[in-house]
Length: 342
Image (cartoon, rainbow, N blue to C red; front, side, top):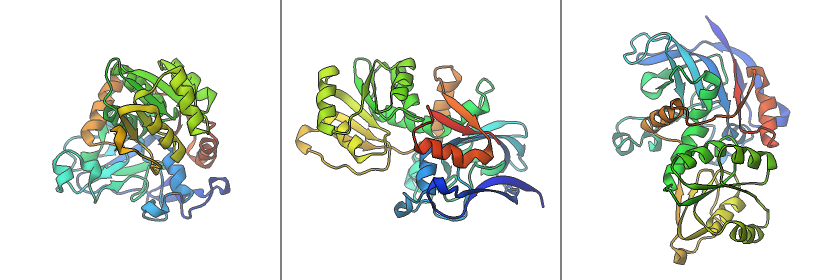
C-alpha cells in the first residue's frame, strides 16, 4: 500500500503542546468522478487554529478525529480515471467547501456553500496538511499558469472569504468601508474593495498590519483601541462614520465597534464566528453574515487574481512546521498568510 506524509490531529489541545503529528497515512484512492492531487501548497488559516484548540467544539468542528486539517489546497492532478473535466497534469485548488448534496434548495440555486449536508475540507473530511488528497472534480477550480501554487492557495479561503464579504458590503465609488482585521483575509479585502472604487479604511491594533494595508492601497489606517467608545470617538474625528464595515477580527468587541462605526442605514458584514453584543433597530443598520462561497464565486475570484489585480502576501513553511506556524499565527506574528509547501 502506498503511503504519504500528513500532519494529523487526534486530540484538541493548545497549539503550544504541538498536537499535530507528522505521520504516514495510506495514499487516498480516488472514487469515480474524483481526481487525485499531489499537493503543492496549503494555506494555514486561523480557523484551523480555532478547530485544533477546541474553540469550535460547540459548533461541531471538527466533526471527526483524527483528522488532517487544511482547507486551502492547491495541487496537480496525478490520477483522473473517469473524470470528465480534468486530466493528469492540470493544476487545481480546493476551498473549504469540499462537497454538497447537489439537490437541496441551496445547491439548486447556486448557493451550495449553504447546503446542510456540505462537507468541509480538513474538518469533516481529510484536508490539505498532507502530500496528497482526493476530491470531486465538481468541487475543484482550475488555476491559470500565471499564478504559482503558494500564491494561489490563499485564494481558496481568505480570498473567497474576502471576496464574499466585500460584495456583501455593497462597495461602490464614494462609499467608505472599514475593514476590521487586516491579516490573511483583510489584506485581500482591502484590495478587492479598492477594485470596486470604495474608500477603504483599514483597522487593526497591529502597526505592521496597518502598514501593509496602506501599502496595498488603503486610504486610511486607524489603530484599533480596546475601549469601543474611545475607538468610535477617534474614528469619528479622524474619518467620520462609515458607509459599511467588514469584521474579520475574531472579537465580540470588534463586532460591537464595527456596528457603532457605521452610519445610520449602513451595513455591517460579519465574516467571523462571534456574538452581536448590542443592536438598535432604530438606526436601520443591516447586519449580514458571510461564509466562504459557491463554486461560481471561487471561479470569479480566480479570474480576478489571474488578471493581476491582487497581491497575495505570503510566507512559506515546510509541512512538518505546521505547529510552529500556527503558534506564530496565534501571536499575530504572521504578516498576512502562511502557506505550507510539502
